[in-house]
Length: 234
Image (cartoon, rainbow, N blue to C red):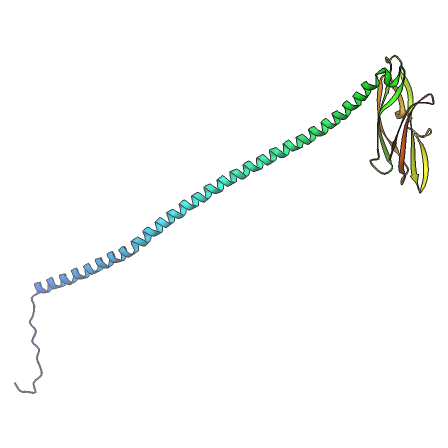
């Protein structure tokens, strides 16, 4: 052969069983690599998933504790509110009881004055007296009175008479004396008296607008004669 002849490469032909073994080895190696890669990835992600589950469980536990604490606080608030309501109701009842006791106390004082007036040395055998008088000015143009009139003795005589009020006022800068009730006005029956032992009298007198009350004198009259009188100044 000459120098100019082409280069020839000689390859040895392998039998097919050898090629089959080599192919199987390559496939096995690839499978091993794939399995190793899967295990590696699973190993990397597994701890993260476990940590997430543990953290979620902790959150649930904390939430349950918070709910329990909220329920306990709500129960305490409800109990405190109930206690406040009970105390308010009790306070209102006490206020009503105090007012009732004050009213009863005033009635007892009047009764005491009445029984005291029954003593012979206080009034006399047939004497009449105003044992209690209370005059109020609740509103302009109004005069409210409460009286307890008693008669001494054995009660075998019925006293019959009437009330008269002498009211000293200041009207327009001038002093004005008023005799109430006026004889011509209606409602005279409420000023009449008729009793054997005692009589409580209560009512309201109308005054001129702008009148300033300076003094009130209450008189008990029998056949036009004064049997008892009592005054109050303002």
